[in-house]
Image (cartoon, rainbow, N blue to C red):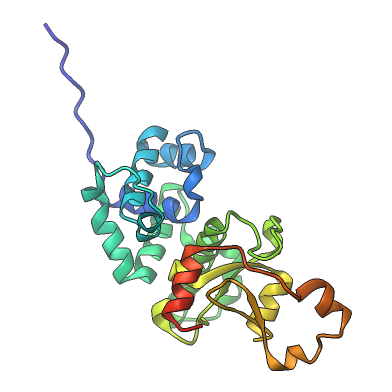
Length: 250
């Protein structure tokens, strides 16, 4: 008699959410089943690396960024991931934080313990205040991972690839517009010098990916620092960066 085929185990919503978290936080070229992060997630949710890789490719098939550059991803199975994508688009803060909660639970810990290094100073806060602050800080940490992945973990200007020196700079400041706080396209990867200059308004970027200088900074153009380090630099090209600059008339 023929052997019965094993029952196919459907993906749960929680599994899809953590797969989406990984999709956002690693480079597209690294979603293959040999990537240690893919393998690790497979172990965490009891899925094969191949199945994880396929789900990541499903998300890529509905990602407007990849569509714009002609990358199709894996379209079979996209119906399963579309609701998670839509949920992210409509409520990034909740879905990102929930994904981190699920991952922590799978690792037999909690979000607070996992991120204790950045949450340690909140111990005196109470109620909704601490809940809100925990969510904000955790989401900012995830946002940094997303932005660095979008720039191949390299500074958009210098190409520096030392993680400790890299920052996820918000094009539209965090406090200026809630809508864009966690928008992946609203982040640019800068090393420490350029992050600080950008944050202080000394430099900006235009849709041609060139650095532009504030009037006060232009007055320093004879200084060696300006001439040798900052002048004539060009931002690494990025469709995501270009799109958001155009949308916000930068």
